[in-house]
Image 1 (cartoon, chains in turn orange, red):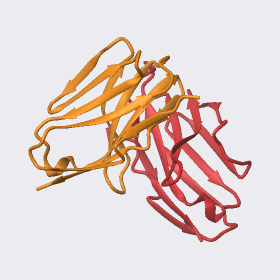
Image 2 (cartoon, chains in turn cyan, blue; image 1 turned 90 degrees about the vertical axis):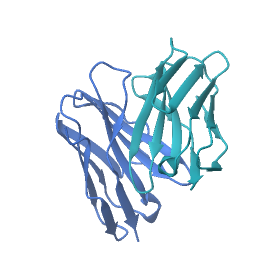
Image 3 (cartoon, helix red, strand yellow; image 1 turned 135 degrees about the vertical axis):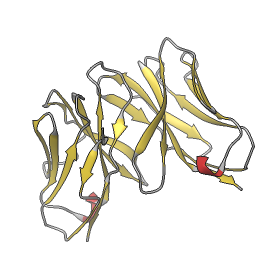
Length: 111
Length: 114
């Protein structure tokens, strides 16, 4: 069974710092990997989706990379802002209905 | 589009009562998912519909849980009878017909069973 791990579980950084969130998965036979953001009391918002044939995706200050062979993905956030504070989850898709989520990294950006 | 709409946002009920959660997916999306989120277990897939047909309900914890999708714009998740261990946030999500696309989540229903 696919297992998705996110380290660290929590991270605090000062505003303006660049940061990297990590995601690892045990089975490299994936269709895609998604990074989500979850604000307290809210649902998940999809930030970036990387297909298995791609190496990275970028959206604004966010850049996600995928190394399928090693079972790793990173989410890079440039010039962090207090509004980036949230929990970030990664999820790998192995079939039409099989989306395996990590437990998330809770990010706090300190003004 | 208004996104995935769930109701109610909060539900507090007593053990043994029936609970019905509702979801309206994004128009045009043909895949619908019900997830449950708890601190201990994270996000768990309960059931997945494609074109209104339940495809995989292996995540439904017990027979007390049932889900229906009578048409493309509405789905329900029912718990009968409810138990305190069912307390969690229940999310509905939908995705487009192209497959393997981004998943769009509703705001969730916070369920508390006393």
